[in-house]
Image (cartoon, rainbow over all chains, first blue to last red; front, side):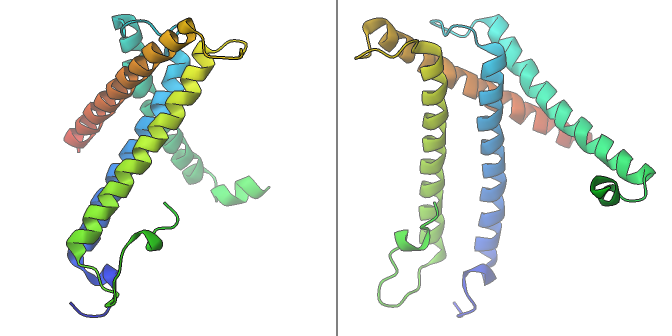
Amino acid sequence: MDNQGVTADPQLQQFIEIESQKQRFQQLVHQMTEVCWEKCMDKPGPKLDSRTEVCFVNCVERFIDTSQFILNRLEQTQRSKTSFTETMTE
Amino acid sequence: MDNFGSDFPSGSSGKMDTGTIMEQVKVQIAVANAQELLQRMTDKCFKKCIGKPGSTLDNSEQKCIAMCMDRYMDAWNTVSRTYNSRLQRERARI
């Protein structure tokens, strides 16, 4: 191997990209579990009943919907006004 | 994971092969994820199970924490599955 440093290695580059993507996924699972636990879990019982499980499923879907909604609306706001950053600093 | 460099043995040559780096990084990532899970689980289960903190953890509190841990893992798995399915669906649309 040459001495250009570790990031010149394409195998390592790909590894970094894949692991980064996996980590983004993991982080969101951690975050959504925490948020949805607050919304869906009353008293921890001997098992996860179906009503609570449905709540978690809905919670994840709605969380992602919310995230997409925010991005879309932000995009719309940016298109209709001259500049979003100008709007923000007014 | 901030003292990244010091965890890798470099020996006298200062070079490490790619395979070793990748394996060690994977281990460190797994450890970090486990720590994160544990931290959040502890936080949630403390909130659910401990009322007014006494001088010890009594039996009912211990039972509650044990159940809470299992339910938290169930919740985590459900969230992971659901999120994964959602991502697959989104990708299929494109």
